[in-house]
Length: 112
Ligand code: 5GP
Ligand code: ZN
Image (cartoon, rainbow, N blue to C red):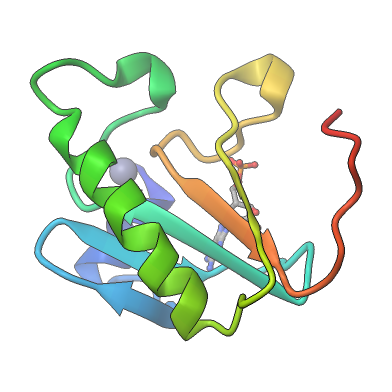
């Protein structure tokens, strides 16, 4: 499959890893928007939030159980934002479900 994030999971494209277990990978965004910008992804390909089903949603719960640990380990002690872009209007560029953890400075209130 021609998916950049599946290639990162397979080790075919290098990444700066922040966390990894059997089901999840977290790595630093190549084009950070904030002082800390980490992407958290399921190892099993899911295209977007629109493709989450009762059969594959357990990994989404696991991602959210793990995000606080990833954020704390990255030094985000004063809060952070979790974002996922879904589809064209949200400017989703990589069609593999990913959650942005952004922080390291005060973020704007405006969400778009
Ligand atoms: P989206 O716009 O789909 O929500 O976010 C995709 C994110 O993936 C962008 O923030 C972009 O910088 C990041 N990204 C794209 N290709 C790579 C890559 O090869 N390595 C890393 N570390 N990040 C990537
Ligand atoms: Zn993928």
